[in-house]
Length: 164
Image 1 (cartoon, rainbow, N blue to C red):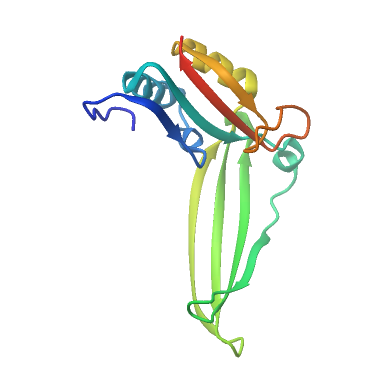
Image 2 (image 1 turned 45 degrees about the vertical axis):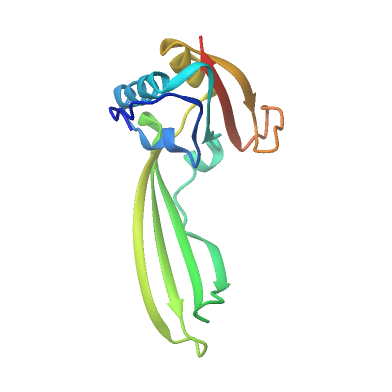
């Protein structure tokens, strides 16, 4: 995503599911944005999202929480997912550890798996500066996926940028 060359330009490029948050280092963020810019047609738009940091959660001790507890209709198994976020505020990143536990209809263990992902959070001012540095102009900035205004209490940052 930093250096790919598709040999074509687009009117719209989207990076959903917090793709930018996967780039932990500033140089990687800049290379990604440069590559997006290279693939945008003049007048085209780049739309993406990142989450709005919850500073109370960042400063709190990491507590595992169950965020999924349901029965899988395809297998009949009960699926529970527990997540725990380990924050590193000095570098604006965190590691999310996820654990899935599967149980049969009798409550007996039927399997388990786990994974982890590192992500980085951004402030609005930081995103504005990063986009400006890579010669984008912000055309829209929202606090949610229904075009809610960005402000206190926003959980998301949804941005539409154009080539400046």
